[in-house]
Image (cartoon, rainbow over all chains, first blue to last red):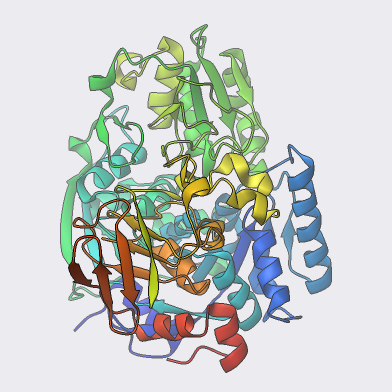
Length: 417
Length: 164
């Protein structure tokens, strides 16, 4: 029988015939931590009396969750990570280098790699055909030391896409709809594998958005085959040699198949406090929004800022709605400056944050007040997520976010385009 | 044999309920962080839980972040095991890696405050308050071995590698 993409990658990396349900030991091509999971990883590594990294070139430390640090404690955590980098030769991406998943996408992950990060949204790199998954600090400490980990080979759910998005609809709407169908635990321990004729209509930014949120359905990984779109992307990032064609076998076995027609989708929003609590944006009209946040590993790319700037050009944010924008990396920020998007967004009343994660997880920069609501392009709307358990988070696309910033209430972007 | 009271929680208790991002600055001060364990699901939990007690949850416990601090502060609070209908993947691995047992069983019949006895080797939960017995699913062998050694680090220190 043929193999799924997950089985193919794990077979190669474990030098075995890996089938769904098997437990394998896989070589890891890239392991990384960020500044809120890294200190515990370092302490676990040190308490295990490990001194050397298995391969410094296959590890990375990212400073993105508190970037720059808002307080003494987190500054000291940064100090610990910098010292670890000095001692071990582990490459570090210090404050200002961008969100780990965006940097991994731009510069590090390759098709066919096994990528393990101490951050749940490590799944983002699945868009490039990497078996990328999140783990905790202990697991990553052991990968740092041994260069390998154990994995249960997941069953795969096939998501077959057809058609193309209609105006005002995008990848975020697709993935929110998908999570609504599958449920917040519907893909737990499993892989989501995307395919179908509709793939050709998804650019890499779309694919990163979708893979990024696979974990919100519980999935271990969200995998895309590689094609010309992936090849062109890797070339545009200056690493054409990293491309390799990857696809599941035609006779691979899937637990089930879900068909989605991109053309039938509409702007979607996830309501508080669960990501699978989805509804069409038009049904939420009238919901007052005090803050709009555009950014994160889900939707902080150039394409996302282009969509938001396109809607906000020549307009102003609603006087009672704050608009916060965080480009996902310095590369995105520079390109957005070059393209004029940052000027447009600032003229529309936006505050531009440094590349980083802080607002999304409620660490700093955009903490909500009691009773306030935020429309965010992030991936999570759990109670307390943006720093206040008495606040409410709605998730939507950059287009929905921009439209909502103009009207001050949740707005289907097609109304203002 | 583990013995303690049940602290009942519903479905979809996220790592943000257990140890939210707003407390990220306490992650290198674990005793302080542990004072806030599960604060956004039940603000009284940290002050009421005693050594040996159990968290008894619905489905998808621990969804969200990879932060290992979530099972770590639960363990520091004295919780001897987590019983749930299902557990999110990363949390599951993290808990076992810290030597904190996670038992998958039908928790609907257990009420808050019930006295429970858990026999890890037999795979049974005895609800003394109800006079009912439940069985829980077996962990994959690799996780059982990690749990037997008290967690991933002691396991690797003993074997030097993964042993399947």
